[in-house]
Length: 197
Length: 224
Image (cartoon, rainbow over all chains, first blue to last red):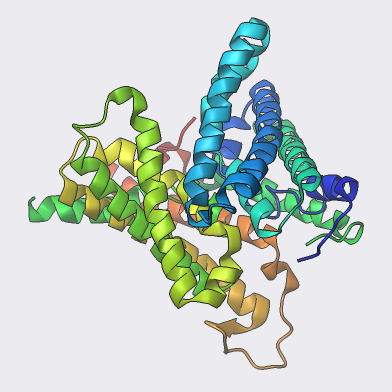
């Protein structure tokens, strides 16, 4: 892969040109079920961004300071999952203590995040593409924001679709998939701007 | 286990309760590789095996797991099987493993596996859970293979890497890119829902005319 990418370029690239949801299909499950509601989409998107940035940094450290020196790379899947679960758990406790208001709006989404494929996906991409620490963090943050952007856009579009006549068989998930398809096409328009990957 | 129960599970998982077009689970980890038939086949076989074996294991040890730590035990069992699949792929099919990249690892977060473990393996015997996991995987495989056939055929003019369409055929670039997968999934969902609605109607009222399927909302059991 490309050895050194400017972290700032990578940040924007992971939001727009290689959006983790629209080009890599990651995080679809919660994406479809949550995007019915604008407010929860915002909460979940923010939680994903938060967790993704922190776990990207942590798993980078775990990977390069523990797993690789000990030659335990084959355990990386399990270790990454544990890192994600631990971060989510700790975050839940910290947010609960620090700001109950934020906990009320974010809290219910945190457990969902442990099994969100986008988080694990971002970490695995980081591992495969040999990112450095700064790149890993910006990639995590960028991917999270990209996910947030995509779910907000979709939630806004879905509020309109609710009121339009859709063929019976396409109602619900069907029309949502088509909408996501069009969004993905729109995002392809960005792809000439920054070339990563 | 009785013959009829195994058959009803098979039918349920392949058609009436298909993981993709009815439950909409687990599309994330596999949709990205559906522009190549061979990769899709290997990936979905991996998912089916993981689902089957982890359902089997979790059903066998369900009495030993305290309810509070159930989730994390499930994830650990699943990742154990995924690691085995990853190592096998790297050893025997290195080039496929390279192309699949992170997606093999992402089988862990495939919601179908957790879903079957929660919904079926919790309450059933190990062998039956194994069968349920395997058939869920097959239902998943069938849909994704269908999508992959369309995408590879129109996107590259090949099937399993062999040229099928004449060289004069201009490949549809859109089929290689992400949006086409979304459209195709939506089309499969649409088709399946219409088929099921058309089938449900003659069962309810007598004069069911299968010709008029889409424009009849009453027989739609879809969510509100």
